[in-house]
Image (cartoon, rainbow over all chains, first blue to last red; front, side, top):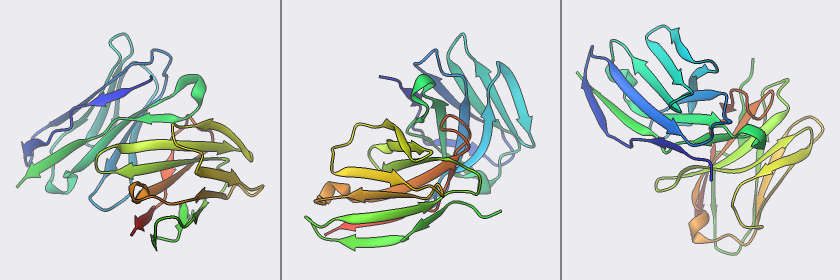
Length: 111
Length: 112
């Protein structure tokens, strides 16, 4: 059973701090990883994807991938109250050709 | 560029009925995936279609079925509805199933 695991949270950080969200995956064949943000009552929105080991930065967001440790993370710098949402990590299912989602981490940024 | 369009947005049905949900993908996207989202189970994969062929299927009973048309639009059907089918049904499209997927707004199905 291919799985993606996330700490459900809630993760609470003060405004302006760095929020660190983590994810592990079971399938060593997975090559692509995705982070989605989902506000309450809304659908998931793609915010980052990463295919290679190392870091990928986009504005205040940095995705990190370590394939040897089967670990993916998302850092949010200068966290804002508008970043409060559930963050979903997903990995590709390898030969299955679909995405496997974790259950999400709820982030709360306190003003 | 238009996003993924799902219709209807809300549905109320009773047990035993059947329902059909529709999804129009982003132009150029040939892969359409369907997910069920509930508070307890998170996002669960239903099935994925690519060029009118179902390539992958999640662990759901045969009451859940789907199809894809030549224009990549997809429909999902649930027969003999049960109370436990109440959920948000999300459609996502991509160029290929393991590429970044973009979600529609979802159809919220309530079973009475």
